[in-house]
Length: 574
Image (tube, rainbow, N blue to C red):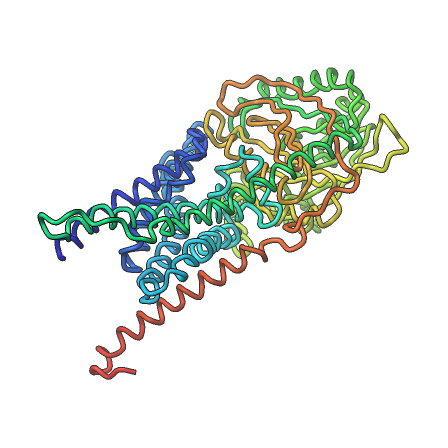
């Protein structure tokens, strides 16, 4: 028995590492999405015989292996002026932090599997695989996406962003619904392998020598019930998804057409613009592309995040640039840039507020509306704690800390093709805001017809970050039932339909892209279909999973506390 326990412990560590490796394979840059359907199997088998504490360590190890590989694109910051030691530390720290949530799943799963009822009732095991384990995993993703401002990057279900039919279930439960399906299938495979090993190997070893080999149990076909039910759920979601994909394709084809010009300048990042010469070349390229876009008579031109060289109300060259560009296109312009709210005193810098904003200019180049980015990147756009210690803002890579916006703005643009048509209602999302389901959902509930992502992925040019970023945007469209256009400085500029179909794209984010212009006539429904996720958000899966996770962890620590009390109290039991 002792030898068997040691063997299980020796195999559990490689199993956890294998799960982490397979998870990494499922996402870009490898992007073998099929690996996600069995990536968790080695870890789940290890958790079946682990203590809760060991289950936490094993799942944390699997998570660490995955996140170290998945976030390797952070190292591109070194080429953009980031200190090597700080980048290495940040990469390791973020990976270790994200792995904590996988560890919480491992602890909760191992605690449940050790409960005596698991061996007595097959129905409880079925419930564990089909309902409980998926909810626990979804709960960890929900907490990771909200706690400490949230890091919602690459939930398990995001690996399936190219499987259009399957991911339509995200219109009900968000990307968590796809994650839950994957965990259920992984759990069914794990139990099937465990039972097959017991039936075909363990029973034969325990059988007396010379006797005929034991036959399979009579109920062997039913021993696949967990996997069968999980696959049945996937088939139902896939079948319903095909209908939704086709319906949205037809709806978009019949919807009013809006001609949008998406600029893709492939400019260097903030620290790599190379001085006035490189900046001047970038701005000249924007004006040249504006001349080309003008021939298409677009309804709206869109520039990426941080393309405006200065704050529009106060910087004369920026105002001149915008007027020059809009004069060539004859269309309104949506562009990202810095917004400054001066302080109240004679020295405007004292008490000033800085915002990462998206400005809407009319066809004459005059600003008409603005959206302020709500979800800022810690240590990139602000330094945590700078509200109480303002001097910390000077440690930010951009030299100051930005302030967050408070609301999702709805910006209206008229049609040049049909002036009598109702205006297009669009809502900007800046940079990584398209990774956060709640922001896209708020925009949809506020009445947006179109999501517009202005981003600058040049910081990570030459890595898999741009493709991973695009994958997150696909799910925002499916969840809200809204189309999205993305204008990326360096990365992927694209048009995405409400079913997640990427119809047009420009740029690869691999460091070898060319500047360009993407003009597309996008069918945008004036009355977009509301989705269940838009109405209830994470209440369907995310909140129940979070509640279940916290209950089990609380029970575990309560059990641990009671287990230590007798020894502390002289051997008396409660």
